[in-house]
Each structure stands twice: as structure tokens, then as C-alpha cells.
Length: 100
Image (cartoon, rainbow, N blue to C red):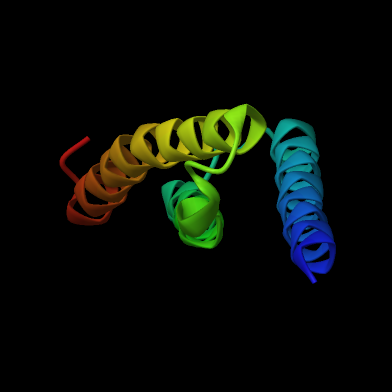
């Protein structure tokens, strides 16, 4: 059961990564700057995925050294993703209001 969840999460993160790579290639070819709204959407999805993973690992955080380490890394990922998403939101709002 846990392996299946990990596989789904890994495939979801892979899908997000492929989407980002495709978006970057399209932006480079067209010469357009990256869309702050697109960056916000992917950042929000990454934050949701990190928080979901953290929730799944919560009950195993003190089982053994490997699970404790995995939990700590997941917690740090969630803490790093949240400020990035807030910056993207601020950037998106400023762009929409013409405050860049």
C-alpha cells in the first residue's frame, strides 16, 4: 500500500517536472519571459505534494532512523516550498497590477 502511494507521488512529481521542462523550452523558443501565474500554479502543486507526503510520513517519523530522516527531509521541503510559493503569488499580483 505504501509503495503504491510512493509510486503515485513519484509519477506526479515526474509529470510536474516534464511540464516545467516543456514550458521552459516553449518560452525559450518564443523569447517570452516565464509566466508568473504558471510558476505560481506549479509552486502551489509542489507545496500540496510536499504537504501530502509529510502527512503520509507523520505516523512513521519515529519508527527508525531511515523514516525519521525521510520525514525530516520532507518537512524541510515543505518549509522551503511555502516561501517560494508566497513569492510567486506576490510576483503574480504585482504583474497583474502593473507594479513590476
